Image (cartoon, rainbow, N blue to C red; front, side):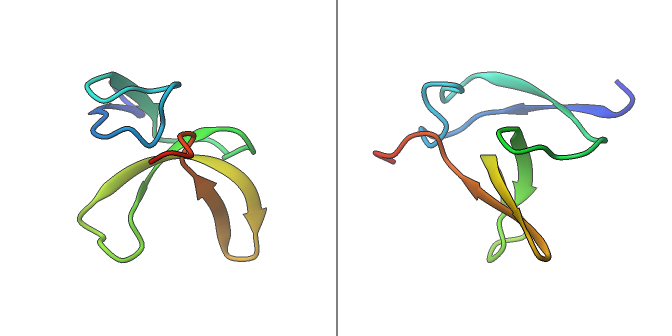
Amino acid sequence: MLGFTAVCIAGPSMEPALRSGDWWIVRTFGPIRPGAIVLLRHPRRPDLLVVKRATREEPGGWWVEGDNAAS
């Protein structure tokens, strides 16, 4: 699919919205908005993709967090 990719969720950080083993279709274009679930590269491990929620825009990027406070 042009402009979209599929990823398999691994880990509990986005529960209950996304559970480990869920497949998620990601739109690879368009603006990021507060509250959006985003796919990004881990800042210290660029080989690792992570799924988080965009919480606020800051100079130079976005602050992101997992939904699951217990993880």
